[in-house]
Length: 133
Image 1 (cartoon, rainbow, N blue to C red):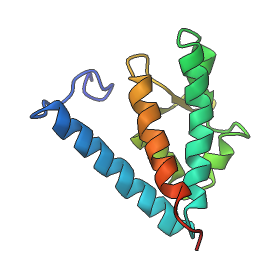
Image 2 (image 1 turned 135 degrees about the horizontal axis):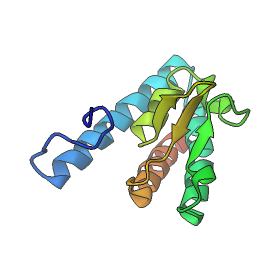
Image 3 (image 1 turned 90 degrees about the vertical axis):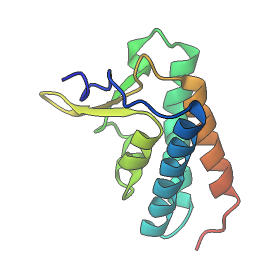
């Protein structure tokens, strides 16, 4: 239905609550990715790869090939081979869906690209300052 497509959202108390909720979910997921993969390098890999796709979409937001990509793609393998990497991608605002031949990730047309970019760069900065363990 419409809820499954993300067209209907639950009402939140305020924009600040939504932002804090989103921030907390991204932070928790990023911490889990680092823990599950022996350090912050895994988080940096996911974020840097996702940022390349996002920056292409920001440059040409009307071009569908920059908003959608196959999960079997060699570049995306950098994300999918990391435990929790796909979950982190979703937390940043990407959608994942299946087709008849593959799984796809996309940046929704209604996504706030600047907000996604801010979230990704905040995590990248936080995990760049952490030492690999």
